[in-house]
Amino acid sequence: MAEIKFEIVEHLITLSETAKGWTKELNRVSWNGADAKYDIRQWSPDHEKMGRGITLSEEEFATLLKELKNQ
Image (cartoon, rainbow, N blue to C red; front, side, top):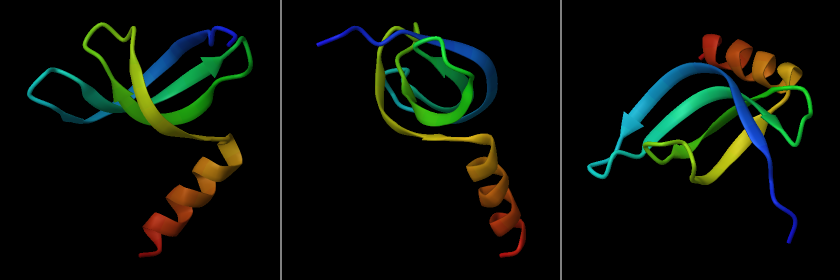
């Protein structure tokens, strides 16, 4: 299995934190050198490990924000 490379380009929001220090965050992340996308997932305290998450393009994130505002 190939190694996945990532870079947190911009930290936007910490949504929650577990007792063990893992945080659920909204960040802009570059995966394998690609353009950064919006990303929601749990991260270990040192940001070396991560949980499963969801990645959104600029367009998907804009649609999500628009729909949330209409609620």
